[in-house]
Image (tube, rainbow, N blue to C red; front, side):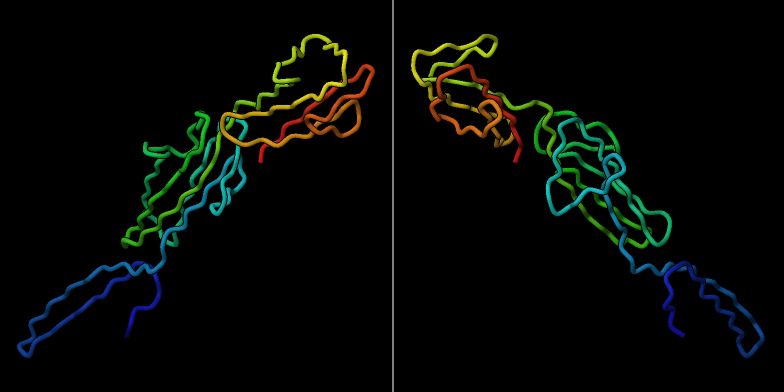
Length: 189
């Protein structure tokens, strides 16, 4: 009779020869065709392994490894170093958490999740005629100034929305006469 159900089993044999001598032997075995399952979480939310997840703070990736039977072991790496589940990842930049899991029967699974830690905000600079403007004081002009908006970030390419007073503003558009305020709200892509 074939063994088809996964789990621990014992095959027991009792043999008797023609002289009446007996022997008993048991063979314990484990049948497990199921690979371990690896999942990644951060603050209780499951992370998508098909795309990078961005954090504007340190991240703590929780690793959950499950299997249909007990005694699964696993190891994890953060980039090229060993990683412990839920340890803080504070260094700005892209990171990969990878996990290798092995169950008692030798079934293996590998998974990884990509994250970006970016705790440094974008830098906004206003310029007119390649001269950086001082944002701590009012800037006075005797002409209609085309204000250039430069938004940079150490890790990402930010986009931004700008307004002149309460209306949308495009960088390098001449500002009309009067008192005005240009505001910029950067957004990461």
